Length: 75
Ligand SMILES: [Zn+2]
Image: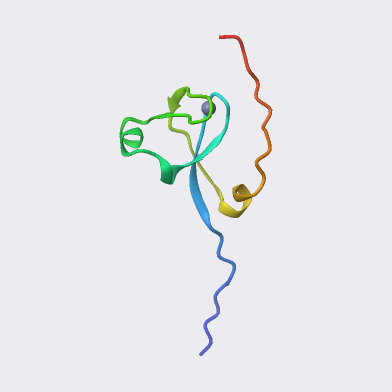
């Protein structure tokens, strides 16, 4: 009996999308307190915001550190 299973295993990881600059941070690096409080300080812009979880491919995010268009609005 042959095991008929797809070998295409996609590595998915949880990321935190900053609501300010939109940068993605690995959820694995999140602090326990951040997850508990639901607020996560962005290591890029320094602003804290609601924990916005995003599931993406590890391979997709592993490569390509291009600057995303940051729409900075006067606040
Ligand atoms: Zn940010």
